[in-house]
Length: 360
Picture 1 (cartoon, rainbow, N blue to C red):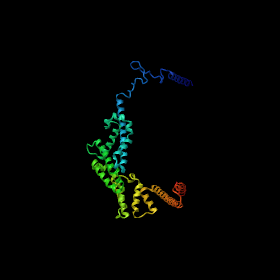
Picture 2 (picture 1 turned 30 degrees about the vertical axis):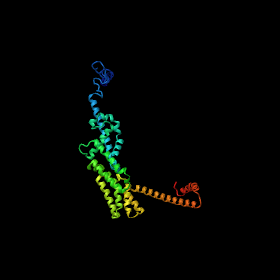
Picture 3 (picture 1 turned 60 degrees about the horizontal axis):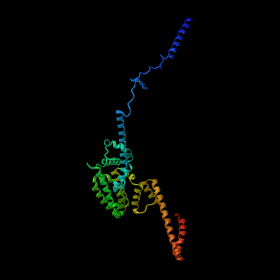
Picture 4 (picture 1 turned 120 degrees about the horizontal axis):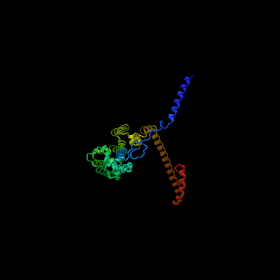
C-alpha cells in the first residue's frame, strides 16, 4: 500500500511539473522566437521575406503586356468572325448581286463597334495585329478585306483601294443598267439588262471573283425569271415544269452548299411551285394545302391560306359594296337629284354600305 502511495506521489509530481512547464512562457509553443529584423532596423510582417516586386516592374509588366495583346487578338478574331457571318448572310441575298459595295459598307458601319471602342489600344499594337488602317474604320476595313481576300483567293497584289473601287464601280453599273432604268420593270426587258450588267461586273472584278462572290446571289435573282420561263413554256406539261423547278433548286443547293429555305423564304418557294402546278388549272383546296405544306411547313401554309381566304372574302365584299353604290347613285340621278344634292346624300349612303358589308 505504501508502494502505491509513493508511485502515486511520483506520478502526481510529474503531472504538476508538466503543467508548470506548459504555463511557462519560456517553454510555451505559442511563444515563438522574435523575428530577426532586416538591416536598417525596419520591421516587416513577412519577417525576413523580401516584399514581392510591384506589378509594373520589368518581368510582371511584360507578362501583363502579353496578356493584353492576347486579349486584343481575341477581340480582333471576334470582330472578324462577326464580319464573316454578316458577309455570308448578305451574299446569299439577291440584292448583294446588284449593290455589293453599298451592302459591305453597311456591314462595316454596323459590325465594328468593338473596334471603335478599343481603337487606341489596337493602334498601339497595329503592327503585331496586322492592321494598317489609320483609325478604327481603317482597322475594320482591314479585317473585312483580309476575310474576303482569303475567301475569294484574290489575285496576288490586289490592293484594298483597288478592290473597294471595283465594288463601287459595280454599284454604279447596276444603277445604270438595272436599278435606275425604268424599262427594266418588265420581266422581258429586265433579263437582257441584267445580263449586260453581269458582263460589265465580270470585267470589273474578274470571272473567278465574280463566280465566288456573286454566284449564289445571281442564282437568286434569276430564280423567279426561270420560274416565269417555265410557267410560260407551253411545250412542257405541268409535271415536267415541276421536275425542272426541283432540279433547279437541287442544283443551287448542291453547288453552293446551302439549304434553299435558309436563303429564300419557304413561302416563296411554295408559291413558285403552286404557280407551276396551276398552269394546268386551279388546284383544289386540299391539293393547294398539301403543296404549300411540302415547301413551307404546316403552320406557314395554314397562315397563308387563312390570309388568302380573308383577302378573297374582303375583295368580294368590296366588289358588292361598289356595285350597290353605283346602282344607288344611278337611281338617285334618275330621280332628279342635282350633283350638289348627291354630294350631300352620298356620305350617309356610304356609311350605311360600309356597315352592311363590314368594311370599316
